[in-house]
Image (cartoon, rainbow, N blue to C red; front, side, top):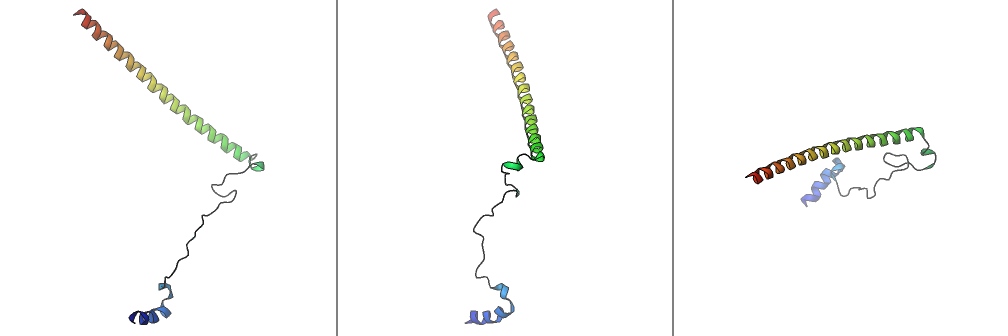
Length: 101
């Protein structure tokens, strides 16, 4: 009874307080060709000079990063080789000292 009287008072003055249902989107947003994130299809889009330049720049960047990684790996390999040589020398020296005794 109190609830009904309260709703009669509130309902005409504040209709936004009544939240009985909400609209919820149940489907994902779909992208059309050319929208952000959508890949370009073949045809005239592949022959575009800007697309070719962009692809060339991306390839160059990737190659450059791969070369940097290769150089760092080569440097690490060289350091490990030097370390192994030092260890071998140390082992040889200790073996010679043991044989002399």
